[in-house]
Length: 552
View 1 (cartoon, rainbow, N blue to C red):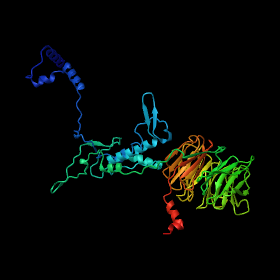
View 2: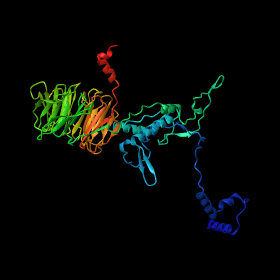
View 3: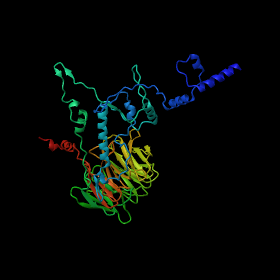
View 4: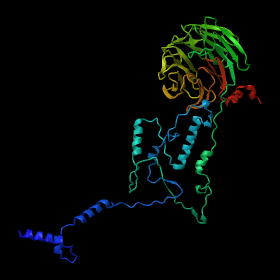
């Protein structure tokens, strides 16, 4: 145990003496044990101050006071797809109350006056601002917004592309970045004044000398002349009393003839109002046991047809105030009549449609059986020889000439189809409107049998009529706003909304010149509105047809 005693002696000796100086031999350093206090202090320093990790030195970017968009390394298409829709605010807004008549509306309170801007004006301002902002930011590289009508498969592919970072064709690749709503980074531009051989080339139209906050292209866009919207008077220029005008959705009691005479069915009587003289004439009285359910003028001439509650169809000469003929066949009221030259078509609550040749002695030449409930809408397209019929069974049929089988059956409406109108501007275009449960105006191509477009009006569609002078269509409505709306086709943007009737606007007719419409409602009034401009070619056509005007 000699080695053990020597070790104990050395340890005892080292603890009893002070530490040796650095002049001690290397052999003695190897035999000295660690100091506990020194180890503890070293460990605490290591925990308190960890060694810094190596990092890359970032390139310093100098920013200036001119915030010019820097598009380098940014996927504009992906970032643009994350923005809000055109014309919509970036933050949700509280729903505002409807502005009456689409006008500026002032709301007074105890301490302030609030101005409410109509929705269509605000949307137009938002679209203008959005277009200007994109033009300023993107210049000639404006991303195109994707239509919402594309399929979901395409939209999913577009979303995948939007999430994919851009790739460069060069040898160097950029680090992928996640698209965000911050489209640009900003830094001062590095521009030089163009030099020529004779000195600096100064362009006074250059943007660096412009005092406007927008570019010249944007200035031209803002200052370009815009077509002013057509102004339509929202007050009827004439109101006539119409006592006993029935508040029945399925009847057609008002029609304006080519001789500029308005025919109106009131109770058991039919009255005529001369637009030129203002005189009112009583045409007929069916008696106490029958009532008028429909009135329709022939396209050219003074003959008018009258449908009755008992199912009769009468033809009168309005000029002579003389009844010419009474036609039978229907077993219930005749609520719809339509002329096509010498063919008079009648639709009834008995679900049948009769084609009647007024020149022939027979009661009818063809019988159409397709509807399951009352026929309440009939309109001929005289150019193509097609008849459109609508019924309380929510069906819209198109018949070719006098054929007894329908050419097309449209079943998309979810309420009665009374409002029907053929476009005089688009070949084979048919418009139809549904009742309270549907509220939609639908457009059809009767050449192909395919739907074209539709719009939800928000209220019952009672009547439709195309303008003769412009590519516009007017609709009258019932529950719940009882309004008359003029639409621009095919955009279906509202030109004007007219109100005044206190009941459903069930009746609509247009003047022969196409400038005035008359509406009737259960409030027993007829209101005349100046809705459309005069036909620009009317005077030219009249001169061409008048031989005396051509003599020089």
